[in-house]
Length: 271
Image (cartoon, rainbow, N blue to C red; front, side):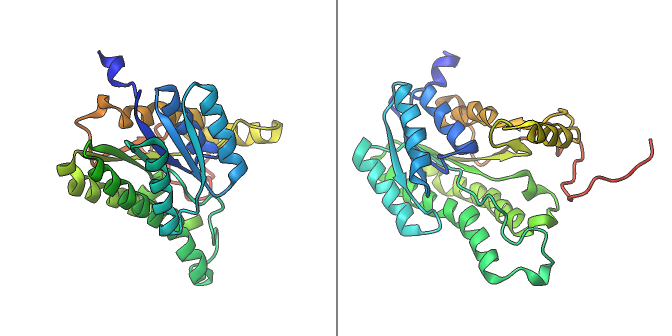
């Protein structure tokens, strides 16, 4: 019975940022659990690869190029998903900015463009997708689940890219508010909060050394791997979490619990 409740057979998921990294792995995990998946991102070639891999798993898939900074493109994404598959059950808003605009800049050197772009990609996109998806779910009348991706940087100081941390903190707050607003429609809203997770396997020895060195600051003594978010996404998307809404799930190898402060430097302490 428990394993059956984790099945997503007959459900349709929309995943943003599905072309690579965490989004790709979560999209594949949802498909492995039985869902058909609409893969969205700006890079056509990447989402076509993810869609092809989902089809190889025996599920239906659609690649829809989408710039999540544009609310009209988010509306079009949901509209096409509903048209192609007849329903939407799961909205997974994973798309986020990867290059941290204005990283390591002094506060007064961060320009308006970097600030707004960071907020639009990481926070506004979650609002746009939740707004469009929830409207469709209510029209269909069968409820649904919305899963947002935040970050552990939302819960600690992150001066290297404070705009990113602020945006992800907004995602957590948005998740809580949406969960209470949409509960009457049987739509659950939760949030995954990753810590330091490798977006892809190390490609060379230098990347292996970097990952190992960075991982030693975590209680788990390693970085997370992208696939490890997949089972959590499946749980939150499935009936196994039917009484779970408005929550943030930290998956960080014990980083926050162990007192890790992502401040961009390692203290020099004599032992």
